[in-house]
Amino acid sequence: MNIKKIISKSNQTGLMLGAVLLTTLTGCVGYVDSPRAEVYAPAPVVVVQDDYVYYPDYEVYYSGSRRQYFYMDGGAFVARPAPRGVSVNVLFASPSVRMNFHDSPANHHAEVVRQYPGHSSPRGQKDNRRDDGRDDRGDNHGR
Image (cartoon, rainbow, N blue to C red; front, top):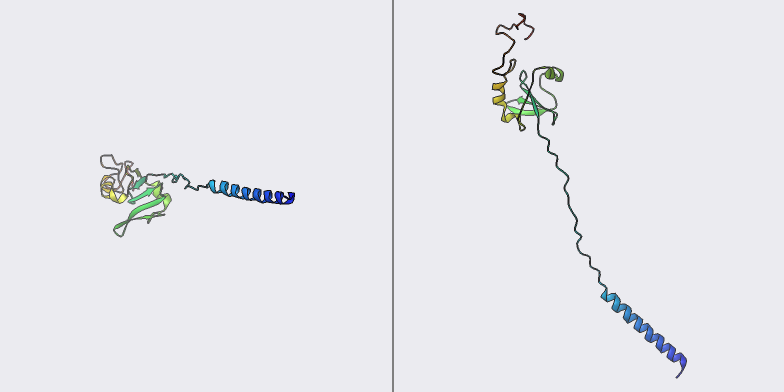
């Protein structure tokens, strides 16, 4: 036998064996792409309770957390960025009462108006104005 034939046959055999081995090993290796477990964390929810200050002389509520004024307009409560009929400076300089509720002023307005009527002190507290329009000093600068 010729040596070239033997080498050629062994090269072919080796090449075949290498191809079979490579195919077998590649076929055995599996790639598994399973769903990745992703953690969903929703954004934190910050709940800010509404806070209201009531201005009885104007029947206006102010919410500092919303930066809105609430008052009756046409028989319904409205929320606006400015008070109706009075400047902010005059409103803030007038008597006010911090409210203890945290929902809509419309839910409490009837009781608040009874408890804090405009142009006077809350019921049960002494008002320094007299019925004739004069205050304790005898003039009418309080009105």
